[in-house]
Image (tube, rainbow over all chains, first blue to last red; front, top):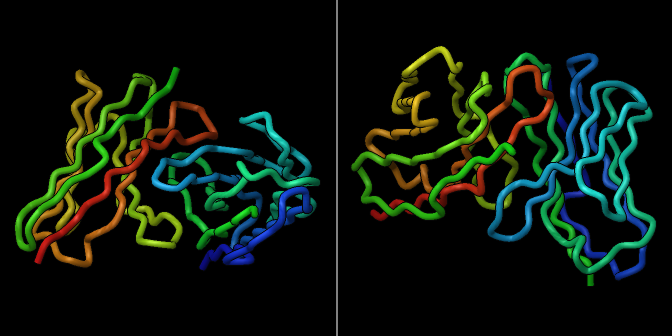
Length: 112
Length: 111
């Protein structure tokens, strides 16, 4: 069966520090991969999505970037975090074709 | 542009039915979804409906789709305290890779 792993679960980082969040999927190949951010008490904001290795689409201009070095690995990065980067980051995968998403358990990022 | 709107809060008594409503703007949406998020966790796909359907029932869950009014609803029968969570409505436009999510409805279930 397919599973998705996302880590770390919580992270407290100072302003200006770098960020790397990792997401891996098991049990499937060539998944569509997504990074979402959820601000406190608000909905989901799509940050990046990828339909294949090395293919990244950015939805919101900001100081975050994403990479897909392997088929089932999706990484969210920043060189210098801002206070406004705080939030709940969710990775998700989908086989496409309207079958919905499977979400990871999320990373709570607090920038101090 | 695409948009999904839903009310922010709903409070019901245990054992009553809950109805969570959602409106969407993209008439080309092929798939419409309901997700559940419990505190501190990711989202869990509850159910989905194709745009060529009017209703889908899955145990205690009933999804109704009114394509004319672009209105989607989720009915939870015999609501339990374990149903307390945030419920997200979402749509995927035809041929799209992206799913558009509403802001979520927080359901409170009173014992």
